Length: 280
Ligand SMILES: [Zn+2]
Image (cartoon, rainbow, N blue to C red; front, side, top):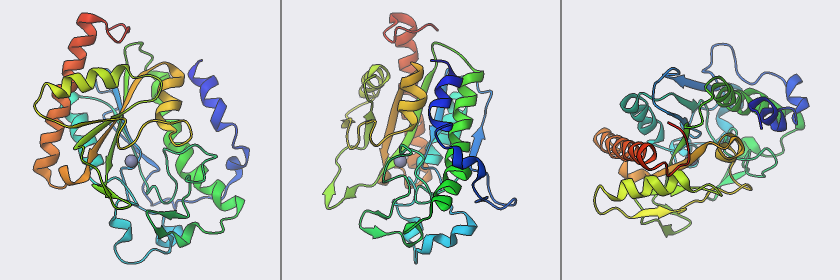
């Protein structure tokens, strides 16, 4: 499927978004950030949950205290790792500009978690009882611009050897359960890149690597990689790092280097052995 046909499948399904009221004021940050768009690496990096910023008009979603600093609002550390990798690999990177509580960029439009009414036991007052116009404003103002940016970059850089890498972080404990993996690799029906990356990461010492843990890629819950990776036939993987491993700059730097070396190992594997079945 071409990028345009593919894009149409979801963007044109939101006709009301075209007339939605503005969500962002002109002086507010963009719905996405594009870093190093002409980077020479054969990979596009994306970071859905990079920011905990909330549009001014949403008045902090009614949350008090430090709730917007917590993992429910974003993936702490993920943007720092993504930006570090963009530099280290000379890769383009697209980051979401606003909190997942305003709208979750990695949820299908039909998902009840798209604009969550609660997260990890915390009620989100600003998301309760939204009108259709309010929902459309979130979709038009935040969701579509981010995914349109990814789609347009991919349309403009056709390359059968391209990889799409999504960077996330996860909280060490959720709902009373601790997560033992310092890092997890997630995939759906296309496990090519995850498999190669797992092999490459394993070469760098004793590392408990989550295999579709703590999360897998599922059509019901995920949007970014099924849409921009799988449906375009682009090899893809979600890399999830446990947040206590990237809380300090030195930790971030260590993970950037570890992931970069693993990625370079994958590059060698695909060029030499053609395991990805892709050119270049
Ligand atoms: Zn995330």
